[in-house]
Length: 315
Ligand SMILES: Nc1ncnc2c1ncn2[C@@H]1O[C@H](COP(=O)(O)OP(=O)(O)O)[C@@H](O)[C@H]1O
Ligand SMILES: [Mg+2]
Picture (cartoon, rainbow, N blue to C red):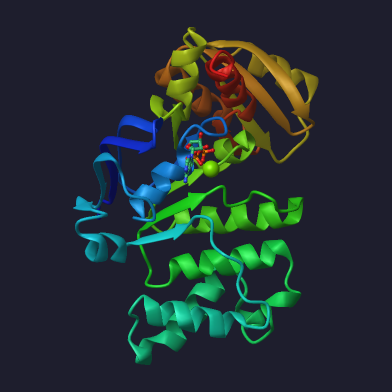
């Protein structure tokens, strides 16, 4: 499997006397989705903008697949798509026209433009809207076109700055599904978001920053256990059949389970003491119980608790 990387090396950004990013070191590698978390003003957008050379670092380097995004801009960014503060598409343009312009700018050969545009619009499920004017689209549809634009040239590294922000629930859900699809196509996605349930759902790992400094980076469960100070994780499960009291009691009695909390008839949070090996055992046991297990993931509530603990004193 090819390996992609996004790396910040001693990255510092000053706006006058104000330090927005302070000696940030972070290396993301492989094919996965990494959530970028932190309060407003933490430096997330600034970081992503330095990676796309929209903002110049004061010192340090931003590397995409090992290439400096400022010094080797063209090559570095040829494998990188981004969704960061994109201007509104002119309302009287159609997606076909808008994306043709972008494909031209990106240097997609004229003979490949049409197929490339169809492909990216299919990915964001907007192919049937190709010839309609963007002005009539909902915010969610416009955001899907923006994602399509980021996908022109089929980049394997994607930088997304709050991709679902400002969308209604349907728009958010559609964009989330698109990101999940993109993730399954062997890409490295770095995505900022304030929606922790979304991050739990989509991301494999999180990087947390505040005041321009990296506070933590790692797998969601590892971060949760590390910063809760306890060797504890919370797993959310979803099953296809309603959980009976008997089943709930059997789950409660499993090795390592300290408590469970119902989120609905088919969804529960399981609080677990012990590290990854306990999680692995829990998953095996739940499968053996034949309860119709279809989702097993770090609970959104756990990430939220960690986030609130981590950032409460940093205001
Ligand atoms: N062009 C700019 N000039 C001055 N300060 C800026 C500029 N852009 C961002 N900042 C400041 O840098 C800090 C980090 O901003 P930003 O990267 O947008 O944070 P985030 O995306 O995490 O909310 C904020 O305090 C913001 O006010
Ligand atoms: Mg921002």
